Image (cartoon, rainbow, N blue to C red; front, top):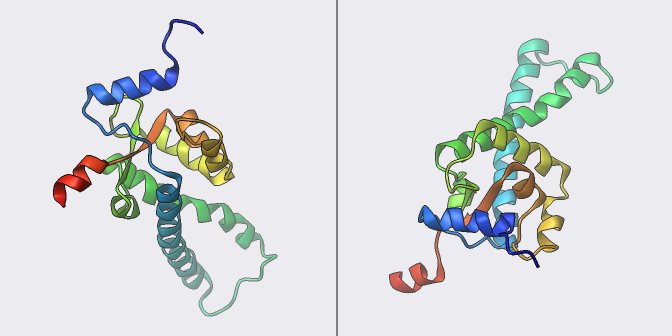
Amino acid sequence: MSSTKSESSIKIDALTELNTPTEPAKLRMRLLAMVYDGLIILFITTLIIFTIEIFLFGDETLPTDHILNKILKPFWFVPGFFYLAYYWRKNGQTPSMKIWKIKLVNNKGQLVSWPQALIRYVTAIVGLGLIWALLNKKRASLQDVLSNTSLVKTETETDIQTRS
């Protein structure tokens, strides 16, 4: 073994110095937050897309093979990005992440940047990130690694016991 610190231990050290929670969020908490956020994003996106279609076409249904339908398909991902990035940049937590007491921070324990949010979102869409989290000790997903971010618990077992 080399005497230099690994990148993941440096990340944890940086978070500790900033008094930021360093315990990785459990996979179950991540999945539940993803489901909640996914439902919110689906609702918002559907509302936006249908509003655009009604504004442009009135009561007519747009055929699936229509060129405009093909142009609009990539826009299904835009509201999701802005929803997540807004909350990640604002306080590191979407409403569902608050419920499950997890927070997104960069490797310095600070709020993520726009580029980090974009990298995280794009890699999360691919869907292999959580499988990656199952295969490593630090429970870092692929989107964590590629965007230099971490999902951490905001409440430790000590906090829970102190409240009780």
